[in-house]
Length: 99
Image (cartoon, rainbow, N blue to C red; front, top):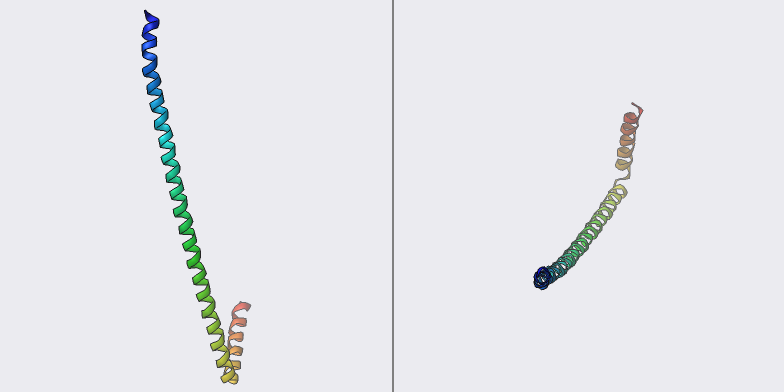
């Protein structure tokens, strides 16, 4: 008697266990898909950030080149004034560094 009750319970327990296993498999699949999506989003964001950084560096480099060319032209156009300014700045910097 007792053993037949256990046998009747066993198939329903097995179904319950199988249902749980199926739910776990589906949850793992969903989590795997979500992780893949997050990974793709992060990769795209990193790529975009890298592209923006490269653009900023290029822009800064162009600005520095233009500033250097501008200063060079002014020095060539006014050599005496440029020399006096450089001497004055050197004196000021030297005085500050001595303290």
